[in-house]
Length: 125
Image (tube, rainbow, N blue to C red; front, top):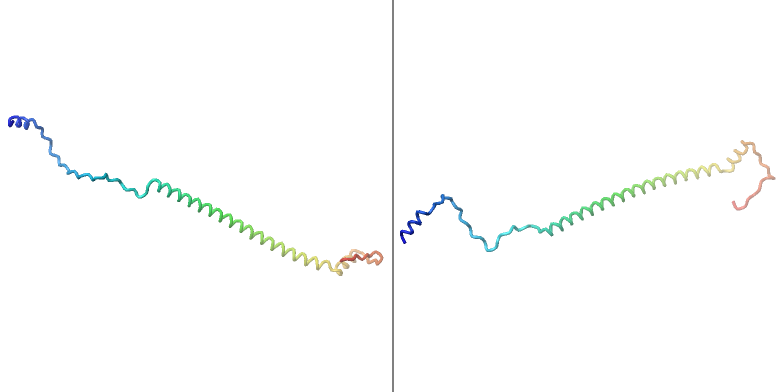
């Protein structure tokens, strides 16, 4: 048997020496990368952010419409105040110009005379 072992030793091909890294023992459980968020949580997060953004856009749009309407209301109120002031001024002018003395003076300028026979009294005024 020794002869046979020697023949086997000569037939043995030596591999070049390679430094080998010692293998570590694998854990009982294969290690998985632990994800911070699952895919479902990521989808929910994206949906929540999109909903919040849409809500903010709608809120800003509504606030802008409210501001525009308030501005229009203020402009209309200014117009109403100006018109009421003009109406007041015009009613004062009407009272001033509708006095009896002024009307009688204008009638005399135009050559009209007072004829007592043609005067009719209208009750109620």
